[in-house]
Structure formats: structure tokens, C-alpha cells
Image (cartoon, rainbow over all chains, first blue to last red; front, side, top):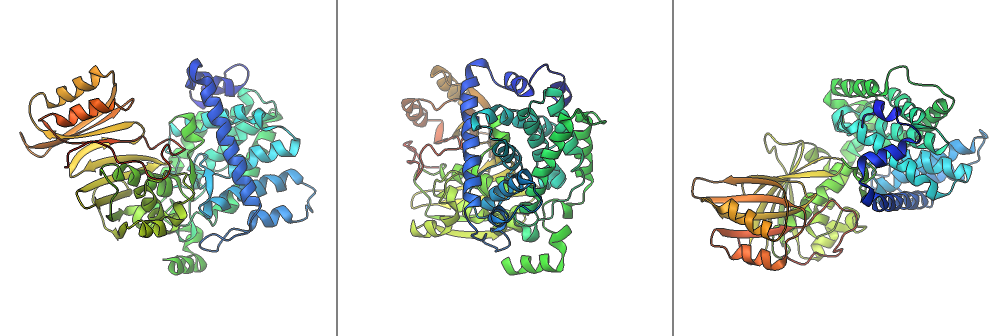
Length: 277
Length: 238
């Protein structure tokens, strides 16, 4: 099912994704597997918030816990929670801890950051999160029909972009959004990541990946907020996916997960690459 | 791509292609030997060669050779564990030619056999094995895979297919290659379930079959046989 088709189904988008992808006799198994993925995400967040142990390179490792312990001077507890959760997962990833790729390992924090962060902020129990997670998977699946979801194929716009789109749809549905709203949340999130480069310092999935997941988990929540207010992507969702793919292909190889451009190609970035080689 | 591939795999970081995919390729290669390898030469190509250390590709490959699945918490210590297990590892970088950017050639050996496997990690943890012992075949590790070394002669493929059919085993994909007409050949069959053991024994006794290996599915999350999958009890050396 394409995003445009998904936007037109009556009721909740997650139900349509489930029906289209899974025969009725496998429904329970899929839902229980998805609940398992949710538990794994939860566990990665918990581990990530509880430690400041550095990654092997020493570039990251303490960001999530430091933010989590810091005063909330903005008066925005949702913001802080979402960012801390996202970085907790990506710092676990950088430490070679156990995480759920969603859709990739480098972008693994965005979805749990946005979805678990919002749910915990509002006191929503985990069992309610399973169907939004199914929708997130359906959105990712739809995007992957047009472009391979990987920084190497289309820069970070093809990696954090889909993860933010998935997270935006999930949060939108969690807060009562119907199919049309959820898909437009995804489209708006995706539209505003187009052209983002993949420039991991030293080739490690750490800088800028850890903080980027924090930023784009907030981005996903923001997209859900717009969609819940009735705002929509002027460009139809499938066309946004097409634009993301064509911009991704235009990016030179240096900006597609080779660690040879962007912040990777700065004096400090090059020094890290030399030191860790 | 299924829903659980998008939200998944559950894996040890940091990269689905460079860590989880590498681990799966090594796990498949390990299972082409009857007993665990004692020596492995791993030749990395392209992005694998460029960013192996940063992504833990070396540890992930060692982990797969030890029989670990991508979610195994021991992956970070796999290089040490390999040394302790008596597995000698050598990593090299080389241009392997016109192959996917994330490609590794695994040359494995133990006291009684050697095998060479070429595979690529194509993104999101999905993998493709494209060559075994020089034969151009193709399988993904998403199904049970039967590798059959055989003589290139009329009816060889039909015979294997018929015996599987008699056991009610469905063939999802089939690829075959030969060195020369009437010479050594190999087929890879992705099948929907593992055939009964006596069926595998029977296949391996056929005159036309010289070598046979049953490889496990490697796409699932939890390792069905966590520590070290027992060697397949199928006779015949390559």
C-alpha cells in the first residue's frame, strides 16, 4: 500500500496496514512479535539512561544520562524526555548494546524517543503503543518501495527521514489521529529532512548520529502536532517520498555514509578518523 | 520487506548493514562447514573495508563464525572469544571487483575441509550470498537453505527436486552453476522448511550428489541455538 492509498482508508491507519500485510491467522503472532520489539525498545531506553559509559571512540556515551539529570529550565518536560530517550537508544547502539533497528540501527532512537517519550509523558500504557508501532512499520515499508532506506543510498534524508516519518505517524495515531492525519504527519516530517547528508565522523555511528536522533524525534512529535491540528502536506505524500529519493540520488558519494564529507571532513573529524584507524 | 524487518532486527549495534548483516553472512558461512572453522581469512571490500572498525564489522564477522546471532550480547567480545575458542582470524582489504559495496569473502578451514563464501550486506541487515566455492549461486538466509554439490548431468536437479517434493518441501528459489559441461556443479535451494533428517541422509547418498549442506535461517531475532549450532550431521566432504 502506498502512503497516498493509506491516507484514504477509513478509521485508523494501523488497522489497514495490519490487514494488508498479515493474514488473519497470523495477526496475533505479528502483534505479539511487535509487542516484543516494543519491550526491547523500552529496555534499550532504560539501559541508555542509566549509564554514562563512553563508546569505544569516546565521542559519545553520556549525552542521554546528562540531559536526563539536568534541570528542565525550558519548562518543556515532553521535549526533554523525547530527546533523552532517543539519545539513550543511540548511545546504547554506539556502545554495541542491544537495540531495535527502526528502520536502521543508526536511526534507531528516533521512533522510541518520540513514541515512548510521548506515551510516558502522557501516562499512556505500553499495550496501547503496539498498533502505532505497526503503523510506523507500514509507513517505513511504503517508503522502502521507492528507495532503499540507508544513508549509503540517499544520505541521512533516506535514513533519519523515514524514521522521523514513521515516528510522526505513530505519535499522531497514538493521540487519536486518523489515517489521513497520520500519513500527512509522516509526509511533513519526511519533507523537512530532504537533503540531509550522512557524514559520520570517522565512519562511526556516533557524531552526528546520536544528537541527530534527539533532534528528529522532536521533529516527529512536531509533525504529529501539526497534523493533529488538521494541517496537511501540500505535496501529496507519495510525491514527497519521490522527492526524497531523487534528492538522495543527487548527493555525491562523499555525503552518503562514507565518512568523507560534512562534519567528518573537518580538522577534528579527520583527526578522529586518523586516531581510530 | 515485512513489518518486522522495518521495526527490526533486534540487534547489537552500531549498524544494521555493517554489524548485523556481517554477522549473518559469517553465520551462513560457518554452517557450510560440518564442524566449526579453526582458521578464517576475511577479505573486506568497499564500504566494509573502509569503515569496518568503526562499525564493529570485524567483531560481528568473528561472532557469526562462532555461531552467534546478531542479537547476541557477546558480539563486542567476539574477537577475544574467537581467540579463546582456537579460531585464528586474518582480516584483509582488497577490491573484489564488480560486487556490492558491502561485500566480504570468507575463506574458512578446519582440519578436514575448506570453503570459500562470497556475500554482501545489502542494507537494513538483509544479506545475499552470491558465491560458494567459486560457484555463482544466490541465497538470502531468510529461509532454510540447502546447498548441493553435484555432477552436471541430466536429471540431477530434477532428482533433488523430486525427493524434496516427496517430503512435501516447497522450493522458494533455486540457483545453479557448473564449472563445465558434465563437470562439478552446485545448486542452492531456499526451502520453506527443513527436510526430515532421513531425507537429507538419502540425498547425500545419491551418486550424483558429492556434497550437501543444510544452512539455518539467520533472519530471526532470537538465536534458536544460542551458543554454537551443532554441526549438521550430513556426511560427505566437498
